[in-house]
Image (cartoon, rainbow, N blue to C red; front, side, top):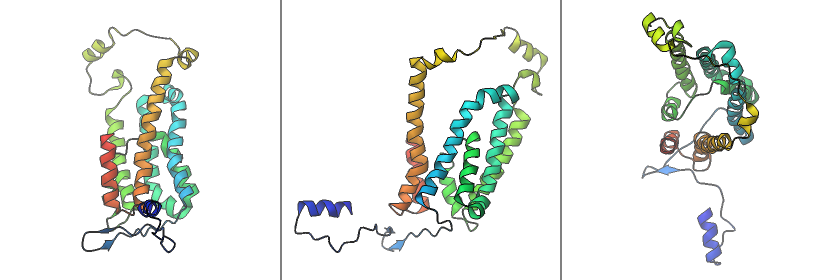
Length: 245
């Protein structure tokens, strides 16, 4: 479409009056086999955008509560509870998506944002899992099971302090805590908020996350909707870009 528009501007004798502006179905090689996306969830682009954004909005809200929650239940338990929230949300996503609609899934993704983790490594595997006979819910069930295993391992082997660890000797505890000094200093939030260093770190983090979120979330949607690419080709390209970032 863009090339034909440019051609018409250069060559006025080219008539585009009867041309269609729909992107053709993508075909591969000599077989001319089209890729068709026959999804069962027919949601609007706005619904999809809100679902994507709700996950990261939950993660943003979680950062504001992390300090208090960490003091209340401990760092290791806080991470464990966040992982459990994601495990339950992952298991429930297929049911919520098909039975509850986009609003219910937006709420679920917002809650899951509290325990978010990196998804770049799993992107290609997810594309392959979605093409198994069990369909796209299989990807959520597989990651839900893996999440359960990781939660159990975390609960058994990770502790907040050396005194709570089961496989540590008294000599090791004394060596770790011998020169430890107690610090009762409180954070000076006014000084932190006025610090150029803090704002430079925040700006750098925002820029990195902006690009990462766009690559992980919206680039696959562009490949599918605009370029009509297959699911495997979609995530192969997106994963490659993510690793370069």
